[in-house]
Length: 164
Image (cartoon, rainbow, N blue to C red; front, side, top):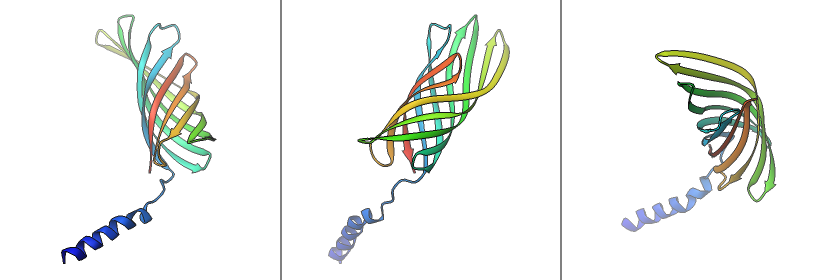
């Protein structure tokens, strides 16, 4: 009896690769980087998350949310957040590398708090960027990107992407 169970288990394990599915068009990821703000000497640490849908082998739509930075200036604590919706165009370079570009819409929210008073400001504008990705497996890749969410902001980030 034990031999039959072991044989069935071995067959199931051996055949499980036949049921493996290529990752689909949905993906999600996280990134970390640095944001350079014009006229500021420091680069602020950024972090974010994103989800996307690849609707064509070379095109995807992506939504992202990123904390562009936390800073202290003029006696105030300042936080800048970004929400974006972008069209991503990619060009395979070979050897698991892709070059991609981003063009989309983003909304920036800045909050400054000093002496118990909070002031908020927001603006909406175009976002664009360029990056390179490398696929470790069909389901996991890494990417580096330079992005321009506003004329006075430049963000450089590295992230990991998981495809479903």
